[in-house]
Image 1 (cartoon, rainbow, N blue to C red):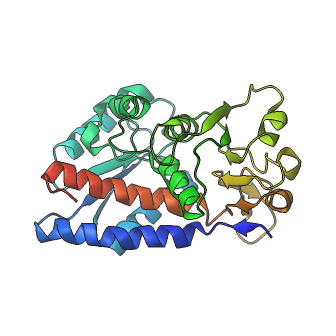
Image 2: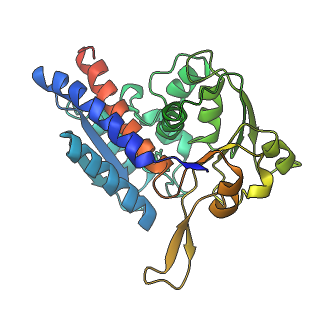
Length: 294
Ligand code: GUN
């Protein structure tokens, strides 16, 4: 029988652990504070941001919600980030991606104070990760590492195929899983839209991680018997339900779950872990900025 990995349950345990760290900070007069910057009308982005704020409230952390008009200039975004950088009550913040195409991504990333960059997207933090000394591990990759740990799967020596090379998931995840440290030491193959013979590669993998943004792209026939399957995709697929859409992952769940030993569902797999690791990074940021070790 396939094991369906319950991301909500693993995230709840992690958040329980975080409460004592928040108490330690609060005893010294520090309440961790996270700000979110939303610059999009995309309903999915709005939902993600409100879920992050709810997590903060649940843990007794401060949440600040900044909404910028999607037509705002790069300078307006930069000035918002400068204000967040100098606010001592904000320990971490993120700009919800994707951002409008008129905002040059590399420019705004340089405006983020690297100590407040709880996404781990600032080039300094990317460099620290790649060189094996991460300050903040990017939330989705770190959440996936924790999910594997929760089912006692050690990546060391395993063949892991990641499908998708984004800066948010694929690239940082490949780096994390490669590291010479616990939760790493895997042999990682990073595949993408130009990869030849993709199914031959996924069929060789002990662990397949789908982060390509195409609904139900990975099917059971692309997997070996007993593979571990992690589905990062959250795609809205139109249907004739009341909502007008259903959520689908990047993996075709029915066929994949007949082959896999363990698989994450969508929703309820990777998503809650991403948010738990964001809380973890914000608490870590508050600790670094206030010199209170946890
Ligand atoms: N959009 C999708 N995933 C993420 C994430 O982890 N961080 C940010 N800032 N935006 C996202």
